[in-house]
Image 1 (cartoon, rainbow, N blue to C red):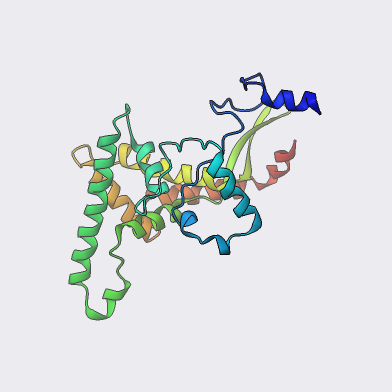
Image 2 (tube, rainbow, N blue to C red):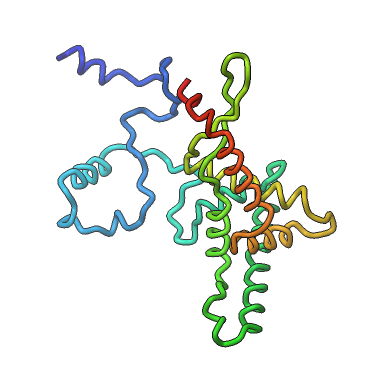
Length: 229
């Protein structure tokens, strides 16, 4: 017992282990980002939450990372898209392009709303954030392909994709389509707004690329059992 207590009292130093190295002692607690957690009265907390709140009053807490925020305007998917669109670390330019894209979508949709007859105005979506999220949702593939070697040959094996991989492919295809397959004199925000609007209605080259991947996966379904080899 005394040996275990003395081990706990020793200053903590990082050692070789099969985990990601951290600058914080394991004694440190994780930060709480949600503002709502601090407004809950103590009478409504469970026994575990009460104990956790008492510990946070006496134990040190890790610093929150740059990506974490308690702002109500924070959009994690939009931040990921901005980071993927960024080149050479110029995040300010990437943010400006995204802001101009959302503004351009808003202008187009409002103009379309005012030109539409009374019966069709309710069907027109004017919120650019809703259009952005729905367009990326429509571009996400359900199944993908993985190259697996078997008997000296490489096979394209269909595999289910994780949520993060699906989001990554949708954003990558969207950005690549805007950079490579459009007119050079067209601004990036104009290309991006055009692709998002056509993807919102399940049309365009990005949606075609998604269907092509599904078609290839369906054609290679005979190799699906290689996934477990």
